[in-house]
Length: 87
Image (cartoon, rainbow, N blue to C red; front, side, top):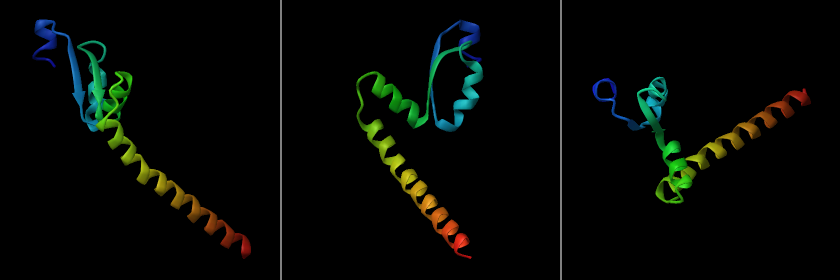
């Protein structure tokens, strides 16, 4: 960004991986005009642009295991608390 945005006053729009998103935010809105961070940002851009396709499907597929994990944790906590209350 220093090589292009600062000396040439070139507006930049950046696409990064999700782990680089926090590092890019320090340059926004100064040296870069906008950025898309990670799969979630790409999915949001597809939905806003009316082109929801593969990114939206991949994002939804990544959300399903997280929902299953939350259900397992809740069931585990219910089991734990019922065993504690029986004592």
